Length: 183
Image (cartoon, rainbow, N blue to C red; front, side, top):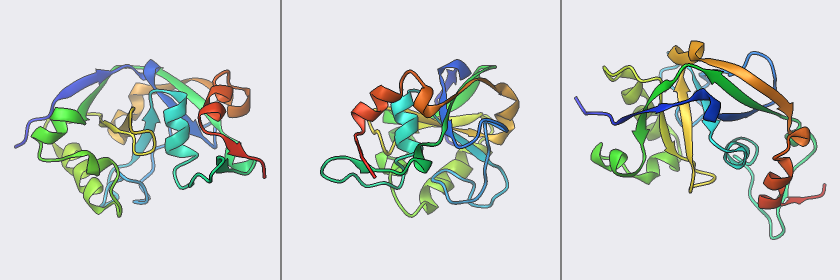
């Protein structure tokens, strides 16, 4: 059995952007996301450690920048910024030398289709260490880490704050980093 490098993550360090401010964190198993379970047995939830990372991974996920920015509608920005509290999460490190030592590389965070990343998710989920999820390099802000959490850790996360994106103090910084084209 392969050995995982395990780190602890405090829920207070996590940021999630969602269309909803209830029933969060949401754990899905549609199979449509990078690290969803390919067999749809367990569900996953995705987080950033900064607002720009959470924004890039969620709102800009399928968007392509034009020469002057991103063309987003008001509906696409109608989101909540969620922060959390709770128990420490024990997560595997799937980045840097830890990923290489497992036989992987950065492509696991960026390749499409999602067949191979989902197999990685299944292998980590089923590992005897029973980690709560794993860290990976964000595909959409690749100088930052992101986190996927397995539903077995759902009870460790409680929403601490929920603020509409446009009212969040960090929204202006995010929109300066990722300029928007008026629609």
